[in-house]
Image (cartoon, rainbow, N blue to C red; front, side, top):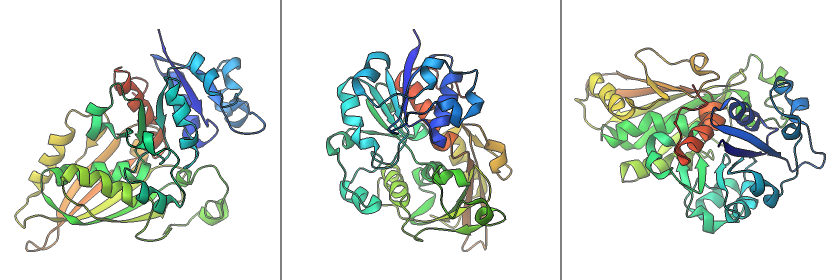
Length: 346
């Protein structure tokens, strides 16, 4: 029997890709689309590429009715804005559904940090304490059977996967990690804004946000601190690329000792990711074009600078809508229900 899946919030970019991937999944069946809009849309009118691929009775969004969803689904994906997901997750969990949340509502362990970062109160502290952080490469063992999973953020996925092996092997200093990362415009969602308006974005490239206080920085530090077993501090600066999708993170680190070698750095990544189906450790420099429309994360490492004060530089590329959102959510679903981890993704 196919695993039955529902998507709440399918009209955004991440929601669309969830629909697209579920329609391709060999062991899952998309059974319910739900929207909070007053006028319930037909997903095919928003994304015509779904015409001929999705059943009429599924294509038209229905209200977010927990009982109706629980009658037909096993797992629910929440592709909602930050702050909205926590309004629905408790009832969905109480109805016995597994929940994969793509927002930030359950990513941060500390309620105070969440409320400071997202400037709003947290309305579901009980389930926050039980949520599993959804980055399979680091927390795979916690996913089978998990009731609530917080899908890792797009920027944090690239940053954490690029740093974790070096922190885990005590090869770099944890107190000074500088992350410059650039994302395509879809990272800002479908909502119209001046920054992503075509005449403003085209032929443009620059940093944005409150530099040094981006909302993804606490998430990065939280997970890397968990990996290291001691406090980790990063300095994260996001940039907006004049492309529709993709993230490239360039991460600068200080070696823990001056005698670290490039071969040892590559060995740390090989040790961490040799068996990982979606992390590719490369000799050449990753490019966002190489990971577009895939669930792969490509990374490499370089060692440069004077021998007495070398610099470790990690490069990491991913598709922010797939490995940074919908693809990772499907990967999580596969692991929660103990399916082939790569199902629907390769």
